[in-house]
Length: 426
Ligand SMILES: [Zn+2]
Image (cartoon, rainbow, N blue to C red; front, side, top):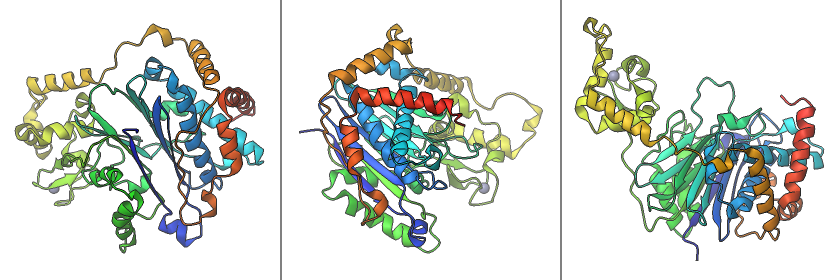
């Protein structure tokens, strides 16, 4: 029996419900002896066929990754234009191919992508997030959320954009210790509940969702919490909501308390609060001089600050006195700076193995892996319906084509990409 437990929940947003629009979120999962994979896609709302694009993307991501499950692609996954580029190109090509069959223009549907791949065979976890969905990695050493962190970008990053891998956040961890417990994948409908956009914060609330994977009926358990939130008058949770959990935890897991930013008025605020709830001061004014980057980001900075009161007090003081007493010296001590450096060194990846430096070699390995895995059995596939919504059913051609995919898909995919690019994709 597999040690991995799964849970999936999808709910049409109340705004979509009101206008009779389909839910555009999709969740898909697969498992075999080599790996366990889960993917979640949130269709881009402004395009009519985004629900379809998301459905194809979530299935394609799982099937492609599962096909590579017999290969140790750890080194290839470390490269910023390695595995993630190959994966996103193939998913995009597959959407194009499937849209083409239905005579749908590729530009009429697009989606975000969040996925987690657990290599049981080679003992690593590869996760990625493109756009404003999120992957929350649940670890004993500290939870981390991968999500979009560019508030200046005009629209969310998506599979169909040009060079999407440049906007994709990825994580690669070794599975050999018991540190990694699983992951929560979610759409931006749960921003503010499970995770905070533009930070790597996983809220303490998220423990409820993660622990529901231990229960018999995941969907009912999630609905019991989400429904009242959504129905509350003036609720900000009006978008489509999807949550997928993959877990190997034994029993309920407690999550750490949420990090906060302390204001000079003494009020503590959530990390995604832009203005102080006590005095209305702008976060950016209070923490104008804070060295977030030296700690690896805002979330890591406040995790450290919250557990080091002297440090935290100093971090707030400079904003109280913007002239800093005429001194340019850093308010942070040598020890704290050294701590920041150690932290960023810990996050630095190992030197890449020469074996996978050449993408051409990787293509050959992936192709061989796909051929060897010709039987392509469907270990576990889940696609949720949401109460008879017509946009949510999986059509037979999707099942059949994905199951017989293999090397053919990739060959077709590459051709489609070539044609697509030639056609002047923007
Ligand atoms: Zn304040």
